[in-house]
Amino acid sequence: MTTFTKAWWKEEVIYQIYPRSFKDSTGDGIGDLRGIISKLDYITDLGVDIIWLSPIYQSPNDDNGYDISDYYSIHPEFGTMADFDELLAGLHKRGMRLIMDVVFNHSSDEHKWFEVSRSSKDNEYRDYYFWRKGKEGAPPNNWKSFFGGSAWEYDERTEEYYLHLFTKRQPDLNWENPAVRKSIYEILRFWLDKGIDGFRMDVIPLISKRLEFEDSPYEALNDTIEHIYSNGPKVHQYINEMYEKVLQDYDIMTVGEGPGISKEVGLAYVGHDRGELNMIFHLDHMFLGHGPLGKFDPVDYSWKDIKRLFQEWDTAMGESGWISIFLDNHDFPRLVSRFGNDKEYHIESAKLLALMILTLRGTPCIYQGSELGMTNVCFDYIAEYRDVETINYHKEFIDRGLTTGQFLKLVHEHGRDNARTPMQWNSSDHAGFSKGQPWINVNPNYITINAAEVLADTDSIFYFYKEMLLYRKSHKTLIYGSYEELVQPSENLFAYKREDADHEFLIIMNHSDTIVHFDIDVRDFSLEIQNISNKMSQVLLPWEARMYLRN
Image 1: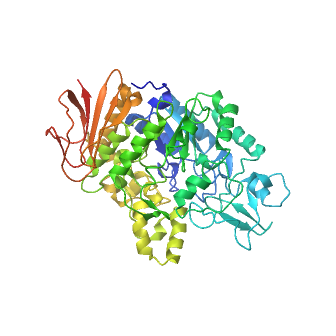
Image 2: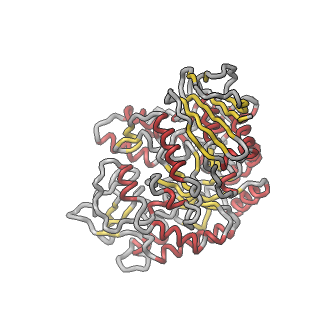
Image 3: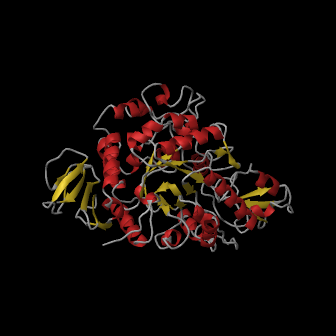
């Protein structure tokens, strides 16, 4: 029997808000802090505990706020610091917590550090970033950006290249420089002293670079990410120093986004005795189906692969480590479109995925709109998309001979804007998100998929989430209990057991459009929760999910 160390951040559930797309209070088409404040009672009613707020700092928005130009200021389009203080107080008053999204692998090219850094070769901020001479008129090496093209940009002012693993307007910070780290720790303390409850740390395994800057030998981008960009030689030294100098002084939660963090090295980031992070968002299951060129180069995968990853990660974490359980966020397609069936079995599969997220071992993270059953969007024109990744890759794919129509089909399945269309509050103009034209178009299905509709239907996806959230809170076995997959003949059946000294749960799910039989003996169990009304004992209907409790 497992005996996990208890902590509030293991027991609570995260709800991610993407501020640009949540609720606009001013009519300018951009979601803002006062819009979030106006929906706090809605969030409270759902029953989540922790709000993860995507970046709201000053930014030129080359990558929708993940390019920060001032870590101490709120971007005017989101509101003021007074609005932020009111939001934080409103959450705390309702018994919820707030974690901020911080980006310290890179800054914006409009940050004062970079503006000085690029001005000459001998200023105090030059070594805040990575500057290198080119090779025979080309970049210093063959590294590719996450968003397409070279990871190096030539700057004529000093006739050198700077490193940017993301867009050319997101230069990478040089953590080798103690002054950079000191500046970062001061930023962390500023927000913690305001009373926030923790941080989600963007692409944290990338902060330590392999300073030889040798060419990557890998064809697949994901292999380069894991073996070249991530898990650098000093990454644990830096995170531990951040913990020792700042994080340990506060009762907070830290979660690191984990591109390139494999199960073999995950525990080094989150082991309970490491003095680093509380948990990670590992991305192994989210990168499934990515071919050598990334998400827009899809390859086949199955539920067998997904189940294997959950089992392997649970085993790798053991009793010392912790992860977050999630199936979508602002960087990935909508969970019901990717892992469910958003057409014939839209409601059934959305509920099944909710049950899955809230019964696996780890801290669940729900992305805004999942509780409504929001789906991917299929815009007809490339001009309707806003994501810099989609725009950059469109140019690359056209250069390789694809048509825009062919590329759009890939974007409809894999693009990041699928998760960034405005929150669908009701069936009025612009889905009740804004009185003005939204910064990105609303998904046309808002007429039938919206908060007003689900709140009026007690059998809706929203109320299923609410039921599951309440049940998880009252049954700690679903938090700290051991996890064991129960292998079934059909690969589309996902069955597992959660158990501790108090209770034993069986979770059985049919991830398919066909009826499936299971061979687990449930005679000594009572059926606690079910997403479909079905009385056949050993048969699951398409996308049916059940949770049993041993008598």
